[in-house]
View 1: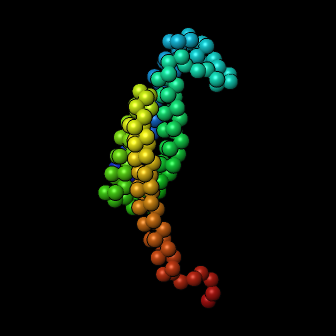
View 2: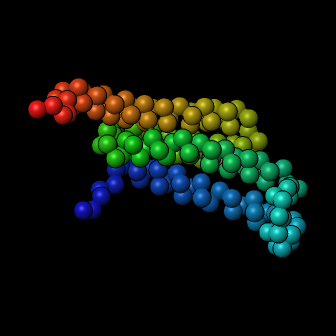
View 3: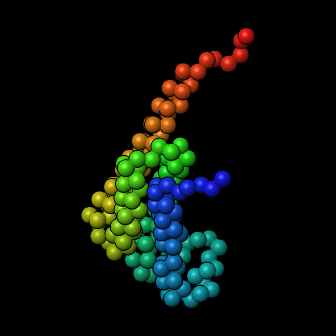
Length: 153
């Protein structure tokens, strides 16, 4: 049975794809600064880039991964339960945009842009997840409470 992707799922895939390529520029920078083998052969993971922007970009990428762990399961719950609304779609789109803006703001050292985009992105999972999860819990609770208890005669 084919699964029809929701708009929320589309934006989750876009966000995962964006996060998946965020590492490329700072690794290419390290290879240019240190040579290919030294940049790739760091058994302890302590190689620092000389360019400050590359170090900031790496931290922005780490932050994107950390926040994706919160965002992705909530989007999947909304999709799997069919509880998507205009609020959840908008939250997913805004989350994608704010993660991109945060990444660029952090990389180019624009503090206000970085902080505001982080906060806006932080609120989006709450909008998407809270709406979908609350609706799901309410639905399952009312369905569970309306059923007859199992067992008996």
